[in-house]
Length: 77
Length: 501
Image 1 (cartoon, chains in turn orange, green):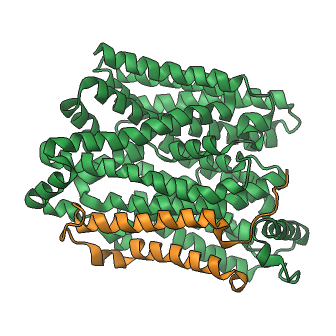
Image 2 (cartoon, each protein chain N blue to C red):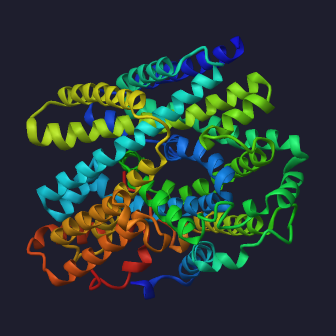
Image 3 (cartoon, chains in turn brown, cyan):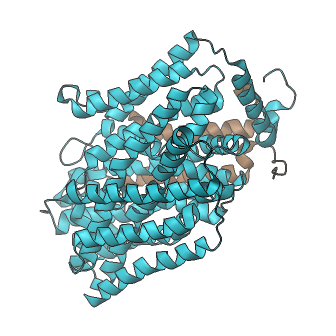
């Protein structure tokens, strides 16, 4: 099934999975430090916000590109 | 003092007015009362989903957790992304099947796909039983905030009573439409209230950067996992992410909000909107951490936000933000009350007691069960003490188990009813054992809900692979639905191949 996905859609899903991997696997413990401060924030907070931002931006791109699928046909009423 | 009471009064009258406005648009049919005739528009859907999903767990619990346990609640940023993603991937498919086969409750979909009456009852029971403790937490939290916001003029029992009264009236007259419309107000209040409270309070410490710098000097363990008590490490980080997002997503109140949506396109946008809204948690970071420096000795951490506001903000502002907190609780409670009454009416009353009931009769029973459930919740809020976070998460861990048969139903033709049943039983029993039997307490630091989902998934996949479904007609009906879904929304998947069906 996945082999049929257009490249754009695959890339989108891979990036979304990457965001979750960075934030919710033991990888997160590598960012578990309060220093250095970035943009006035402790590093751990900054790191989480950064990836949250990337994830949210990805979802916006996903919406704008119809989640990588071909444009939808008119919705059936 | 009077300002506080005025704000509360406005806060109670506005939803009533909105509720009656919504009621003037409603028609007396089952679909309209329970899922707004599948015609809910974008703005209402976003706000009602966001406000329903953000409860007093988010509003009080987040501040309390930053205050006591360090940064573990930051995992909320990821769970909001996960919740949004599920709303797109699972929600859109649930919505499509709901529209095609006329589902209104979670049991409708699962019972229909698995073609099994017992499973239908188990799903209804899990939805009802695990929603009620979570509901009661909202009520306790909300009424408590009103009590503080009014400066004690409105006692807890009265605050709770008045609230239920108002919720019951507007849900009674307007059904889910009234809930959604009032949620627009509640949602906006909640979002800005959380953010603004944090920004305002942190000014006492020289703004966010000043606050973080002072914290680094006095209590640096608040800035990294596993927090000052040393208990909130990766296990809890991951567990909260999984259990909160999936548990809330599978709650019947969110489920109804998948069926109610008018246009499939909206599901594509929801992950972005729901993900973006998570920025409000920065307010909780600031409030909770300011509390560590300014009020280090608060015994009940759930009270940290009200305490900080009443001490460090002007009374009117404090009241407004606390009212926003009550909004968080009430916007979840109203939807939950509506959802449990929907299940009671359609899955129990209509299916087993009176299958030939007329539309008017069903809506009437829906309204009566609304009153009954509100009453149960009110009594619980008065008699069961405190903010029961343990029971709250256990409740979410229970509803979360429904994700396994749901994903099976929307994506895998081999999904077997016996597998769904034993998966659910295994999952729920695991959750209960780990939660209530001390000897099993949280193996490897992961919450009961995570283990429940693991047991559930393994049983589900294993039994589905071993057994074979004999009801080809039902399986094919869903295959056709999936095929048509892909044809409509993912045309590239079906374009050149009919044999993948």
